[in-house]
Image 1 (cartoon, rainbow, N blue to C red):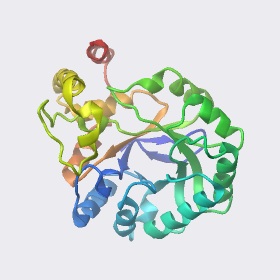
Image 2: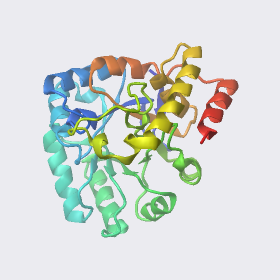
Image 3: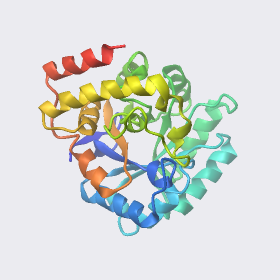
Image 4: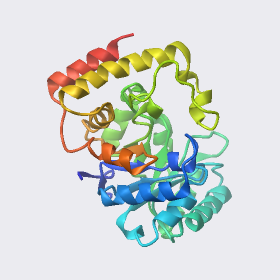
Length: 298
């Protein structure tokens, strides 16, 4: 398993990370024992970075069970999600530590920008938690470049967690250059576009009610069909290298050194095994051009 350094001077972590959103049940039910087995499989494959959040339903509690006897083998990240006042951040941290059955996390992140809460107060609290040993590093998630600049005025941070995948490249305009310049590590979430880059679905597929995608605009109608058409063309490029579309999508993100880790969600050990195959190789210039041509299509 390849490793990259988090930010300017952080730990070296696996380039494939375990995104723990799916095991919380938001993309369809996952029984607890399967979820625990999936986490164990990820660790056995050499995945060190595991990412969860206060808002990930039962995810933290499941990880607390799964990491018994394995805590020292992972770089554990979580987020405060439901309010960024000083009191809410501290309360969320204590609840997360309880659920995760640990006395510290390696990375604590603010889950999103909310102008209701002064960012200087939020970041001051995050830094105090770091000084107290509750977390080793701090980070932010879903911030734009200007929001990161404002946050950094109060406390330095090591990472940004943005959405980034073949079908969503919005961060390339301003966020990627800012992170490169400031040596902020990117933990790319939603690398498979919530399943659009897996070759699992057809345009007439209906997501069950307990799956968040059943209510998402991009998973119905013309947009759904258009993205699936692009995915099939990308799958053909992957096949030329004996890769799956999933592996191509992960490897494409890792083409950039600023991407420290690709956070991939998994519901079972078979999916983890496929994800691990997304690292350890590099796309050629010709392949990158072919991919770019597909992405440029309307």
